[in-house]
Length: 376
Image (cartoon, rainbow, N blue to C red; front, top):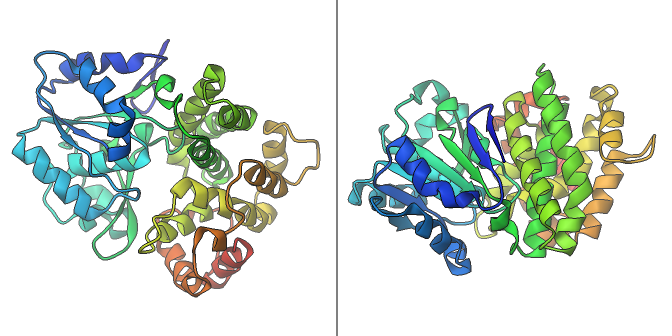
């Protein structure tokens, strides 16, 4: 087991969830609100966490996290936090629960409304170190939200926006690959491609951050080698370990910025009535975005190909499309239920997303629309 102090403190090992009670005590959290969703409760993972809290820690549970976390859910969880007189948060689940936990930790100590803290509204400067302490426990290997400084929330006005600040980093991340052993194959594929998209987009971002690039490439190498193994055999402990590490590394590199994949997947994820999975969206959009960015990234496509174990001169976009097909992911946005009529609005929203500015090639609304059409 290694303790990593990079952006935050990370405990990474099989069985590490058992230390949750000790971590609460170390951080001075005596009355945590546990933030999760009904799926995690149904699998028994919530009970495993609660059993690890031990005596002396009084907890309450909010399990109403939706697939794409909403401002309404944040406010409901905030009510539960205040009713319990909580002094911190333990978030367990996929990226939705972890992001919701961050937003609750913010509003527990900062005045509403939530929109004033969105990055595109200049909100980073309004977020202070007073954010309530948060312990993050991922149960998927995808978003890496456990080590990310952002929380993406669908606001009441319908926009899916990022809250970004170093103060939103969880105080501790407990990364236990054992919690992913029962993850269904479809969710393994979708979340795994989320991790791969993060590694690829951060590497291609034009900002100068060599350590982040090195971390992103290591994560990509691990994910490329293990995602199909983890999907075929969910009990493959080595593959599960590597996928969780890849997800964590992808988010460690977030500080370098993401790009057009996320600038499009964020507004797509806010489409009413569809509940589109973020990682699946990223997978579907990635090939067309890679083709769009290729003229602007120098030799980075060749470096991506080598990292993924592809032959020299291989088409990375084509390889990702082939991987998506082997993983059984949707062939395009149409297969996910997105109407063609919605594409123009998504293209118009993309340049307003906080990830637009760090794409290696600036995209116009018309070019975003072309990417969407190519992904349809």
